[in-house]
Image (tube, one colour):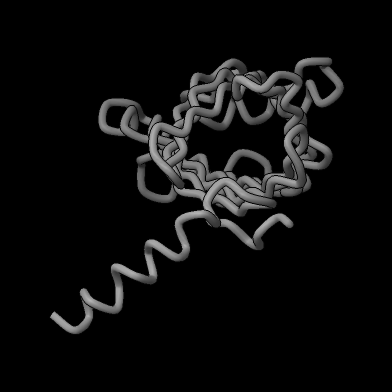
Length: 180
């Protein structure tokens, strides 16, 4: 009971902090559920930092893996920039730098395991409750065709590696400091 007496005033005092100033957020891709019936598991976790009302940085960490034992694995990450042109949560995401490391590749041992990648996304950030983030979006890999050979190699290694992917990020945001 004492813990509740202390916790309730702390929550009331800290409630104005939500939505004020820069925030950090963490999200998990809910589209991972399709791994139950697909041969390729596509998992993704994202960490982000809102800089102001129009810009945010995010670091996604993704894994593509075949379900078969000893199959190829791709671990990818990068630095992405979000641009929010309107106040409704609609945003455009572009990768500033993105790399992937291909492991357990039994097809070509002489090939370089490091792959340079590129993607952009169009999404909509919804905050139904303080701190909760729901973000449906469409991810378009290599929209300008610069890394065509890298994506061709990945599409040959994995049974499913879509160039256009629908994603649903579910996560939570944390305020960093109060705006004065």
